[in-house]
View 1 (spheres, rainbow over the protein chains, first blue to last red):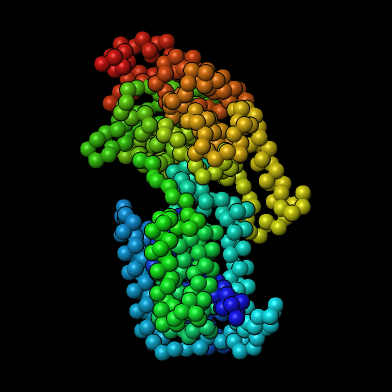
View 2: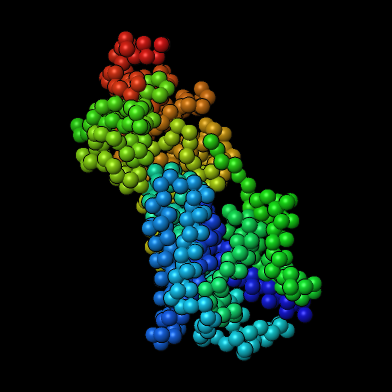
Length: 290
Length: 255
């Protein structure tokens, strides 16, 4: 039984991990926690839905189209809105992202209504796979695999490519990055695009599990954010670990103690962890030089 | 002899404050050109105007005969200008090696699509990496950084951090190099080494070097020409011996 519960936790954790990864990437390069991340993912999922249901396109075309849309949406947020802000401080940026969130939420509600829709995907939710004595639905297995594949891709991108090096350099020292020939503003915009794509994947994985409606990403976003804080916002490996820990603890808590308070446990853990480790479990604390 | 860097009537204002006022200068290819002056004379502002971190208010900047006024710092870096900073701008969570490799960033070609070619020795991505590492090794040898190559730069002594920053600037293979107070914070021994290195760098890499420095001994021993600034204005430009004896320079420094 406990194995099965952990498996459920890992499925939830995969979604949280993607959201947390997306938030942490933009946070690292622009020092702003993008609270529009969830709605951007929701909106991109709707784009996939429209391509599937209205235009009858094959799933993979809709999937690719939705990710492309997500990338452009991320670029748009940075190029057209965040970059326009004049000498913004962190609070201003935070409020800009909240504004964008409200805008997207309203737009989705107006365009598609708040009814719950079904996103059809080519893996089944009812057929199961048995593996090491555990039963897992095809959909949940796909969720875990896609999430892990995406995390590995992000790792490879950051660790080995020219773009990844530029992202890391920009995150660490913008002036030095500029002087070494890195177009830092373009790099930050691309980071927003990549984050948005990661979020959109989370949205598309999420939609069949719950349903597709404008509220679908609100809880995953909060949990993802909580996971990022738990793991330490500035460590990408940390936020992924934080997300899996959160998913598993939630699942165990829900079964053994109380389903009603399942959602609250995430925030309880954060309070306790941050009391003892203010930078999160794996985050490194650093003070800015004046 | 051709001109590597030219400033034409460069003025930079911050609101009502004029940081550099109508400065014109031409630095020849292969020259070591120093800028001296008391604190707040506008030396670092001038460097920031050249490297694109500040936009000049008036006037123009020319690099190797091409106008770079108002260009972005990364674009100017690609045209062959590299620099160090007075207060160090290193990637503190990277090692010495990684910092130097970042100096090579503008020449790198590895992306997500050709990355798998890293797996065999003759693949394009592998060749690219090997080429950059060779260049960086050359600089590590020159600047004696072997012992700290895999240490995080934030853990290094200040003097070594300055050398790492110099190395990173060199890794970009610039045609013009700006050094902002390279000797500040170095001990006597390190200062002597720095003089050797600057001369070596000019000889080996065929670079034009501009230096901001307060240490008169160092300035006079390395420079071909010196420009003295005070209150944002250029007082005098010329041979080291002539400039340091100039009455206005003496007055500016001694009060």
